[in-house]
Image 1 (tube, rainbow, N blue to C red):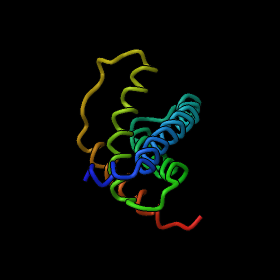
Image 2: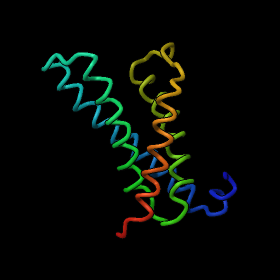
Image 3: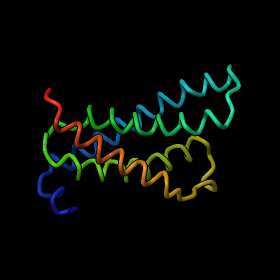
Length: 128
């Protein structure tokens, strides 16, 4: 599967760009949501679902803005989802200054992989 992605350098750059865009969107959405949490005193029952929506939406927007090459959407989406998970954990751990909280959440990984695959398929099939 990785060999399909590597054959075209454009595909690798598409994945890297989509990850950067996804992380940027995540940072923006998290900062905006943090303002709502602070002023509205939202509880855990609201924060967790919104967190997943932010991740999924960030991956979709990252794919939409990052993919230039309209091929191999599912494969690129798979790698976008996996790498987004890894880089987002590192980035937000860096922001919090605490790397002790890094735990592997398999539901999160599965959700982001599926989101990446679906986002990749949608993105390569949308005509720009």
